[in-house]
Length: 402
Picture 1 (cartoon, rainbow, N blue to C red):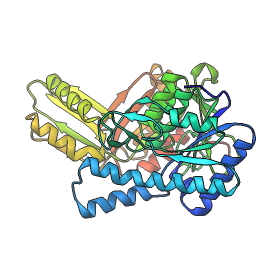
Picture 2 (picture 1 turned 90 degrees about the horizontal axis):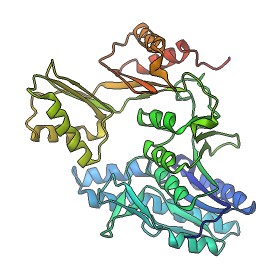
Picture 3 (picture 1 turned 120 degrees about the horizontal axis):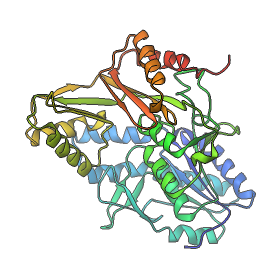
Picture 4 (picture 1 turned 90 degrees about the vertical axis):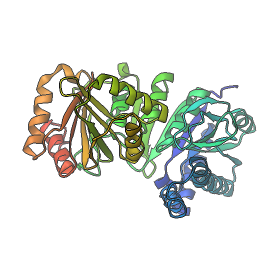
């Protein structure tokens, strides 16, 4: 595949494409980039909440829809967006062509509704770029080796965009969203959150995995492995956003951000004869299902295994644990995680002390605590988390000047 040196790949999320008027605005933005002399690939999500509405429709027809058919249904959302955007660009006098994920050469494994990209064979995309056309690609979807349509799961359009940027060695990879970049906390919850000019791959990966919604963690993982700088910015303004890049390009700071995940559940088993073996079997099941464990704690003395996972997969994982003979489960769907991320954070016990003290003042008690080299995560009850995040942001000195 011949790589275009002036290639720009842009991704626009559902809020950016929610209405015909916004689609026209995106078309104008894409054309402005083309006028600069760039080759342009645009990755699109479904319009607004189309994916959610399609999923709800499926549940009305079938409470437990076959995953293959669910993929066939959900991919319709991006096909609508790509076609409409291509039409809007044509109205501005520029040639555009739209492709589904399979037409674009996004090859995945066979896991319906949460497939992973295994190869990018974007020969048709390259051919159309060579003809001077703007190429619109449906995000979130691909095709398995046995020619089945697949979807990549939540945030899959981010993953499509970065995978294409890596495959083409694009000059620039831009992800447009409804916020201005990456902030020290969710600016919709913490008004004094500060926008970061740059953040390292590792720190962004940790924030994304721990619940920050601005980028999906799988897209950050690809960016890190293939050294793709990702520019995150608002589709509703021209202000510069945040660059996700190599850490040596960033001025270091103790704490980079705080995030929370309100969409988790915990499953706990006690009194196990061999909790280490049980945890290995559980992790094997999760790997086979393609489900990430947000947090896992094993205590041999208590015969205890605690797992925190995305709430949407709760029923599936509980069933698998039952099949392993692990019964008497304690289930809690009213929990949340709060994570503080920063370079070398765990080498500074003072920060952990300040985090726990702040949460205590907000009336939250830790149910479990986990640390990595750059993060500290607390499992706690879900109520009052938003207020606790605001207090923690202030207590750690992250509030922007008033």
